[in-house]
Structure formats: structure tokens, C-alpha cells
Amino acid sequence: MNRREFLGWVGVGGLASSLPIAIAACSPTKVENNPTSSSSPKADGFQSVGTVAELDKNGQLLNKQFAGSSVLVIRDPAANNQLIAVKPICTHTGCTVAWEKQQKNFVCPCHDSKFATDGKVLKGPAKDSLPVYTAKIEGDAILVKQGYILNR
Ligand code: FES
Image 1 (tube, rainbow, N blue to C red):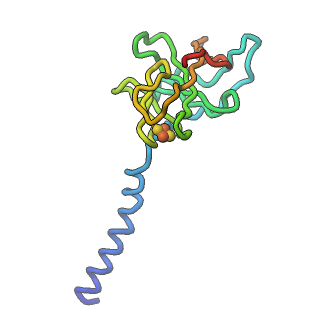
Image 2 (cartoon, rainbow, N blue to C red):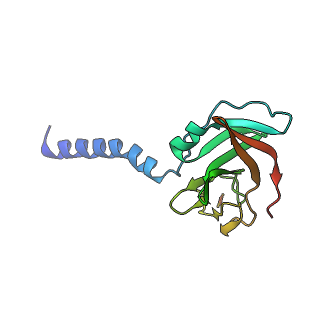
Image 3 (cartoon, rainbow, N blue to C red):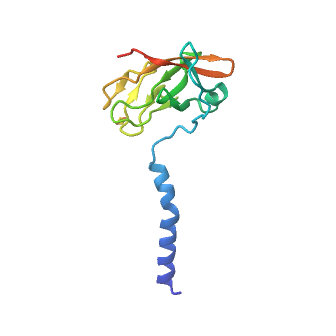
């Protein structure tokens, strides 16, 4: 193998090995936890969507099996013993938002819309608020009540 062939071979190998890293770096933030523990709603309308341990592990709890859609639960930054639960489907074109603890708002990875803890739009292009649910802790369970709190 001469010098030219060697450099060509190393160049292709370097590109091939760095491509997955480049793709991963450009991918939107994902919320990793997606508990499979989702119970049927109780008589009072509350449904278990995960555990306190799962919530505290990642600072947010995404359950994709809630009310025919999904729910994202966080601890209220203004009152740590209270919960905030939103339907995390961005009202722009439907990407899943994530909680950004440093910014203290929900951020859409697709076009950077931002939503306050009450679901209201802080920054577009989304125009409509995220629907908000009632949520509470019972023992080690995170419970969310089906049916939105009107916030528009
Ligand atoms: S889908 Fe969320 S900002 Fe576009």
C-alpha cells in the first residue's frame, strides 16, 4: 500500500467512524424514561403513570400510555412537593417537548417553542398552550387525573 492509498483508506475509515457521532449530536433531546407501568384510571379519575423514584432519577417522567396519548410530569420548581403534568405534544406540529430544568420551561426540540410550567406559550412558533393535568403523589406512585385543566 502506498502513501496515497493509505491516506485514502484512513480518510474513509475516519469519516465512517465519526458519522454516527455527528448524527447523534444533531438529534433532538429525548426524554429517556417511559415507564410501562400504567394502570387503569381509578374511580376518582386518577391513573398511576410511574413512580417518584423514576421522576427523581431524570427530573421528569414521560409516560406514553396516558389517556390515549402521553403525559410529562415534573416537580414544580416553585414548590418541590407539588407536581406539574402536561400533555407534552407540541401544539405547533406535534413533536414531544422536554423539561429543561435550567431554563425552567418546556422546550420543543423541533422548532424551539417554549412553554411555561402552566403550559402557556413563552416563545413560538407554537401558538396554543400545552394542556395541563392535575397530578399528585400517593405513596411512591405518581398519579395523574384524566381530563385537562383549562389553561387557554
Ligand atoms: S413542533 Fe414544536 S415548535 Fe414546531
